[in-house]
Amino acid sequence: MNGGDHASLDWIASPGAPIRGELRVPGDKSVSHRAIMLGALADGISEVQGFLEGEDTRATAAAFAAMGVRIEVPGDGKRIIHGVGLHGLKAPARAIDCGNAGTGMRLLAGLLAGQAFDSELVGDASLSRRPMRRVTEPLALMGARIDTADGGVPPLRINANNGLQGIEISTSVASAQVKSALLLAGLYASGTTEIREPHPTRDYTERMLAAMGWPIEFSPGFARLQGGGQLNPVRINVPADFSSAAFFIVAATVVPGSELLLKGVGLNPRRTGLLDALKAMGADITVVNPREEGGEPVGDLRVRSAALNGIEVPVALVPDMIDEFPALFVAAATAEGVTRVRGAAELRVKESDRIALMAEGLRSLGIRVEETPDGADIHGGSFQGGEIDSGGDHRIAMSFVVAAQLAKESVQIRDCANVATSFPGFAATARSLGLKLSIE
Image (cartoon, rainbow, N blue to C red):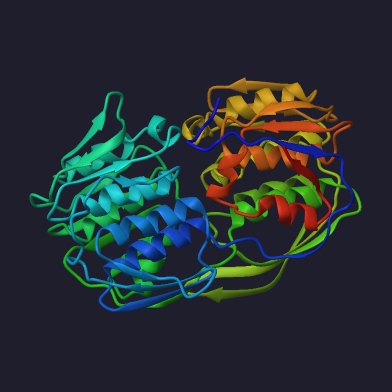
């Protein structure tokens, strides 16, 4: 099955050598999306360094170019955004294609609900199956009028702003994308928008709004702002993406004899649940040179190989590692004993049903996995060779490259083209560190 509109691309990963060296992974996807969006709405010119050159983030940049925002590309990872102000966007000539980017589509839904023109958001085959009611329904409470296809999935047809009103809402889903969509709509709404979450989620939007001078109050699980202000242009240094670093953190942990230094990794506390889980399992991970850049905590991570033990993953960590579960599942499969995951039903509606695909893939490599509706029990074992279907999910594809380094024989991983959405150059980076990977 192909999760996107790419031609199918298969990988063959094989048992590898210890992973050694230094690495800086590409820029943070979440920060890159928001830098484009908020920079476009600022009054003046914003400069972005470390922008992720992935398909998802380029789709967001193309969306704003289609709405009249001039975005210069002076070099790789650099963007100069000529902001048009809060009310300066122009109606796009055609539907905006978000590609595979769930973040791009959900955040744009909130932002476009505040515009004076109609718009439509479309995506690739994978994105077109993802649930959007979780964002369209709370936006409707603010007065947004957004139509979806049957089943609440894309495309989204967003009617021009007919007077958005701020709301106080306790969201039913712990989702930074839903929260951010409401905050972006709140920029255009009359009065105050206040959001409380069942569990704290990533606060990238809040931090960037504050850095750009918008009055906003926020704390874990809470955010409040008033509509009708303005955004000041800024210089943004995008930290290295923690989710991309996660595959190499796990690889250096589980491949004996490994030692790796990952440079300049974003360490937003709402993002780094994987570090806490791995440390609880016995991982040897040290934060070196912690610092702050552009309102975001950053550090270098030194990872040395270590024997892991199965744990019951604390449910409180789940929202802080929702994108890292495929990598965690691989780590769990190498651990002594059983690792139990609960409270992760959100994984069933990501780019794929990640619980089902990871369980199926691990089983095909000889690992015992029992699924539950909101998680799984993963029994530590040893990997055999075999064939994996990634379901077009970039994080699953990269996770099984890590698993293959410990396998008895090579592992064929099908449908890997979507890796380019979040980590262009992954294969070359992996090979440079000693991972064995070839492309069919």
